[in-house]
Length: 497
Image (cartoon, rainbow, N blue to C red; front, side, top):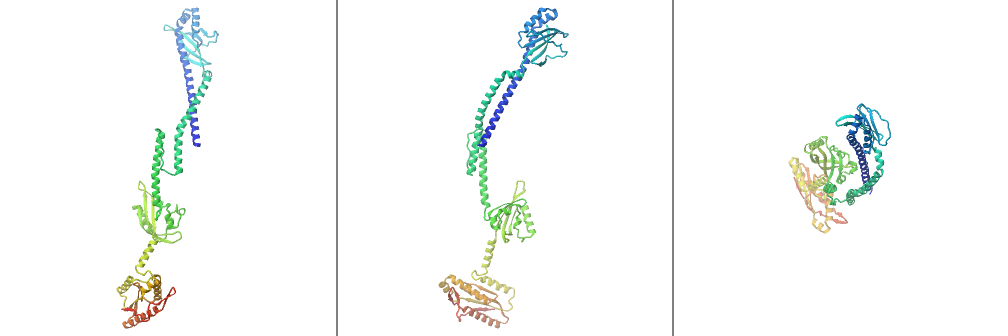
């Protein structure tokens, strides 16, 4: 309501001021016109006087008839505004003087240079005309007319002026109130509509109007603006959803100053928004990459406006992690880079999965022993490199009745049994080149060097196999269960070569 009162008061004040000024200017124009009208009327009267008195003046000046002077005075009385008259001969001498009130007055000599309208002074307009008869100039006539001054006119009309002014102000006041409503109400309607949008925070509303004037055009522009805002808001929501992805994202200006980050950035790097806004991306530098690496990166951005690759960065806590980084330059219509948008994903888990997968390709997941493929690769590598210049041995072990143990005690007991077997073998045969598990219950021990002589190598292999039987015949205690997997008479298969 504060705005309503302010606009209305100003509008009323302006209208009243304009009305007052208009009245003043109008009346001043009238006074100016009336003053000019008086002069024009007096001039016309002067010309009439010259025509009316021409014959009488001729009698008075040429024939010196005294009676003509009385006729002149009698005729001059019919001109109400004529205050006095002086008749001069051609030499400038006074021939006759006339006063409306019959009072003698001082007659000044005829000025050597005089205009028809000489001057206005003390409410008297002094005019000079030629006294002539039948186109013969006989002398000069000075006519003094009584006129009203501006102040006389104002004093005479003061009551009317005040009445007209008050009337105009009163009419203007009511008209200003009426028209102020016509102008203000559409504005207030628009303000209330915008307040409704602000409170509801909904851009779907549109203002309706039947106005066919500038306000109607204004409402249409507001609706157009709301259409654009709604589209922009929708695009911003889409952009915000896209921005808040699982990938960390940063937006920097052309000088590589960070302007915005998303939540994933904080989750990956450990830095919150207040810690990185205004900083450079180098805050994440791990120090693992050379200066040339970054030079090449920015050269690609300058040339292709895009760079993608694997990089190592540093977490806030100091941990270095791998990430896949993609940087896209945003250019304006002139082709100048204005922003850089970078997105990255943490490759730590992926690298761990790759390492784990690579590990599982070569090792048994339960025991950590080499699997069949790794065993074959290692033996083949040893042969290809011609390192086998002595005798070695390959011992294979199958666990007795492992399926029965697995079915009877359960998978968890069977797994613990395999792990204990592995540990016992590793502890006792640390000199083995490779210990592997190539089946569910089958273990392999590979010794790449036993002896140079074949006979001695054969004996050593038998001793190793016998010792393996010995350590595995000992009871395994798992969760209060005693399990024997090999009897003292169990045979071990081994190959020497």
